[in-house]
Image (cartoon, rainbow, N blue to C red):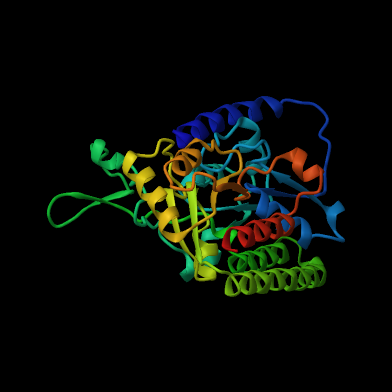
Length: 341
């Protein structure tokens, strides 16, 4: 559906472009355009171009509180991408529509940064852990799509889905370091004259990432428990794996499910009792009905619900109020400590 929207919007924009060429005074803006899809990319880039901000027009597509999985591109988004000098996006299934937008970009020399490619061999597939509700298999509901690149026929004549990767790579500080280095390289390509500035800014920022990474490591090593439980989707797998945390959750990180099964509720409630967990996590902007139901089915029935931020829904207003990637991850550390103590 998102790809069809992009194709439609691109057609409209091409028509508009032809009409615009008929006359009028063109105002030249010599700044280079950088388009980021999600907040972590935006904030990392903002840090890297410090000292040269006036030479760039840095924009964030998802700044209205809608997360990556539910976002629908607008005509304005297609225009921004089509005129970008540098585009930074996640590269997963949720923003696959961007591939079509890139193909129709006005500037065919656009420099593109794909976060999943930067993570490389550390990229993980979605993991279905014990108790978690399995997602519905849409390919089994309808496998009549001939030539569908997402599915392949196996030796038994059945269809197998291509691996679905966990897109939330930014929630690992170690992945963030790789991403910052990749964005720095892209900035060099866009503006070689600023190499020294980008290198210095990247080195300083990476030191901050490494410092916070060490603080997470210390917090987990000193914790009473190393298990966390989510009454929600679980986009924190990269972070959990970095520090050896075990986890249980209602849904996969990229799941579109909103209703937990009786079996899931029962399992998670029993786990809270078994492990003596005093806290349960939910994501920002999430309905805490599932978490409350899980708590109500425990023996204690008084566990605390903690809201942890996956950095998927940071708004323009929050950015203007001073929200930063490091600041949110520091706040998440405090919440993690509370749950593990």
